[in-house]
Amino acid sequence: MRQLNHFVFPPSLKCRLSIIKREVRQSLANESERIDDGLIDRCVEVGVGAVGTSSPVQLIGVAYNLYKQQLESSDLEKERAGRKHFALKFLDERVAEADRIFCYIMYKLPDGTPTPTKKIREVVSETKCADMDEWKEKAYATFAAIPPVKVDVKIVLQDLYIASLRSLTYSDFHMLKEKDIDCLVVYSEFLDFGFDLKNLLPLFDDETMIIIQNPSVLSISMDVFARIHKWRCKESRVCVACDTDGLTISGLIVARYLSLSTRCSHEDAIKAVKICHESFFPLPYAQGDFLNAEFEEEEADQFELQAPSSDSKKNFDRCMLQNCIRVYGNSS
Image 1 (spheres, helix red, strand yellow):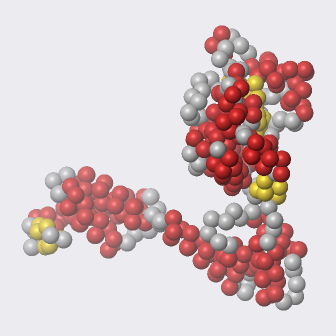
Image 2 (cartoon, rainbow, N blue to C red; image 1 turned 135 degrees about the horizontal axis):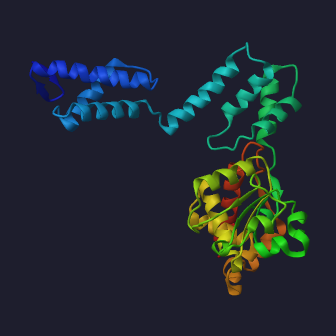
Image 3 (cartoon, rainbow, N blue to C red; image 1 turned 90 degrees about the vertical axis):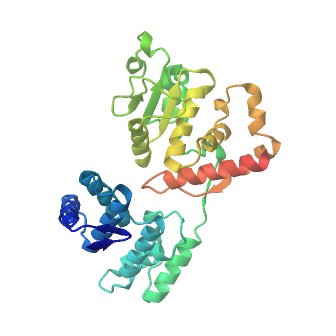
């Protein structure tokens, strides 16, 4: 008799369990996962408790999924692994000194701090001195003390605009040329009636323009999101334009993009768009609900916000939204 946890199995089941473990092992090997026979044994035992032994196929699936879950690191473990990586790189004397200083700064930065790696590299280069200890402390102190770049609230969503289709084509594409727009996301309620946006906007092609066929103001498809984010990571100027009054659809599409890229709530993203783009307000009196006298004074002074990294706009957008919502909350 063989006992697994609180279950007692007759000898006839020993063969079945060994086959199940072999199948789980083979499935993991096919996925190029590292194999731990002791962990497989425990997962099969837990699986037996969950589904019994009457369904070998189901038991194999449960044990396999349990094993995969055990291999997944928690966010904290991943963070620790990242910090350990930079610490070991810094301690490795075979690594170039500039790279060691870079790793030292990455290791020392507080959790959750935006890490513009290009700027860190620049600071390391600018603070170079003969003594290694002095260099690393000077570089870290210099980077940690870098003042944030001032950005006017009117362009808080940097290089991301909303507009109406009419404003794009008005006066020989004046707005597109003035803002130097690189890429467009456009939608018209009249697409089903033969309205040709490609002919209307000949300055853009399939690589620089997305035509949304069936928009949902509460969401955007992942392919649209991915293309917008790809453009913005390349520091392209992006404009979302629709033919509805008050820029309602344009603003909501931008808000949804921001909520997806920054993981802020959709409601907070909408508030930020309302604050940053006065033209987004569907009704004239709505402006007073979001921009009172106190906020307008703050607006004139500009806000100190983090500059975007050249790698991605994600940290920049998150910082922008947080500042917008903070100001909105204080002034409401």
